[in-house]
Amino acid sequence: MYLYGASGHCKVIIDSIESSTSKKIDGIFDDNTTIKELLSIPVFDYDTFDKELIDELIVSVGINSVRKFIVGRIQANYGTVIHSKAYISKYAFIDKGTAVMAHAVVNASAKIGKHCIVNTGAIVEHDCELEDFVHISPNASLAGNVKVGEGSHIGIGAQVIQGITIGKWVTIGAGTVVIRDIPDNGLYVGNPAREIKK
Image 1 (cartoon, rainbow, N blue to C red):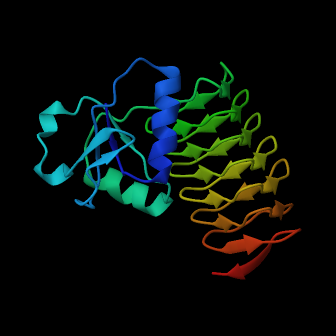
Image 2 (image 1 turned 120 degrees about the vertical axis):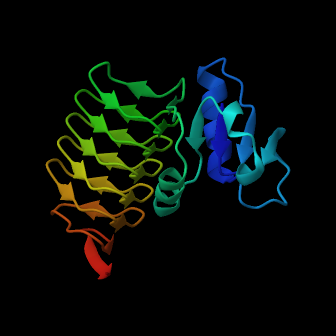
């Protein structure tokens, strides 16, 4: 197994993989060729690496747009990472490339798209739907039947009440409380959430 992105987020991915599987992480790729290792795992230049050695890949980058760019550039067998201390309902669905961190909860009939991040202690309640490349930050909570569009980022500690729809490529700031639907492409903060930037 290989990871792409030798960042702080990568360290959390490594911890999650090591907690839940016997799979060995053979290496990490990063565009910064001055990085030679991360947590004692060697870091390689993807462009010069023998691609035939890559059996499974996880994009370990926290920024949604960068994660999408990398996935669009690399055809690979993408794996899924679920920390051993996460709770995933047997009735939930999690797609390829997604990472679920320690103490996160994904409840019944939730659907998580490709290459999402459900970060430490985040809650995704029943019947929620996350499109691809969404990031739910630590301790953020989505109540039941919330829909989150592609590439949106729900900030640390944010709260979204039941039945809300959040559009694509939206940023919900830290601690924000969302009580109304949010259209595409905006930055929202406060209690209740208000748009401060397109």
